[in-house]
Image (cartoon, rainbow, N blue to C red):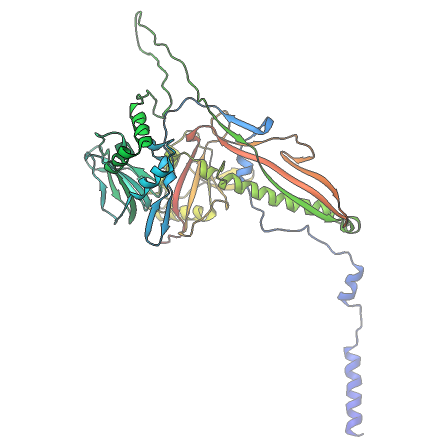
Length: 473
């Protein structure tokens, strides 16, 4: 047999060995019904804030928070603009100082801002000494300072920690006899702007509007208030005999804050051919709507945290904002945050902040508690659950915030606002409205969610700011 014949026989044998003997899986799938999952999305989170907030029914779309009359003013923060290594204060932001609250002469405020001089301090340097005359306002543009007082045994004690946007010596503008109540020392490298009382008075001699405003502020009578700045209620206790009982009344704010429901909307579009022909085994419109609602709820929680009008981060009272004593969130910082309010219901923190707190507990040999919330085990501190929330931002400097709050109307806490019973509602305060079919056979649905949040009294909400999340070891 020739070599060519042998090769031909070998090829035939190979073809017989390679020939298919049964139906292949690729072809078989054409006759099979596959098992499918519903569409998945990574954006869905636990959304603990939406789950834990008590929701108040708001008729008319507006919620008014009535409070006792409060005399405390000027509790905001000052904002700065940085150009290279130079820092300047935004003129209108000087209105956050109590003596300049309500003053609207932009030209005068601009000149005051231009008179602010920039100074740099290193860690450990003293910005102001207790007992010395307070003849200037110190605006803290960047860094962290500690206010030092005398301890019970004559040693030093840190009374308060201040950070970016804070100010000191605000009374010096209208009070020539003002003194520094505490020694202020830089805990880190600091950049400050200094506005002297002499500069303010010099400008007031030329600007009649500023002179009149400062004179009006100085002439205001000292109001009797409680420690929260509310108008005092005169009471008598422990008297005997026929003592004269004081007369009093409870005054209210004349212009209480009103919260209007915010809105998040989108138009969901589904082609009629898809809705007609491809609805088995899953309803295409239903799945499109489910994922859209999930995204809408994620946006709702983000707005409740970050919105400038009603978000928790922006609406926390300045007196309830704390700074960590060592950067990282320690058990001491969490205790301080808890001590500022009664009946704290929950902490809210970015997962990386929770991890940073866990590292600090490990360093001290502490094991945080764990509580059961709706079948989920959640870390806790002093019995208060710490819920994760990735909507709390982390800055470029790797710092974030930890929120602590009391909730509920009966507790004068934080409440969510909604209006259930709206037309075409599928969930409380969330509706899906059919908008029609256009000339391209596309069906449109308007998906709408209404919501807001309100802080009933200032101490219901507290924030531990500038928490470092990248410290290890």
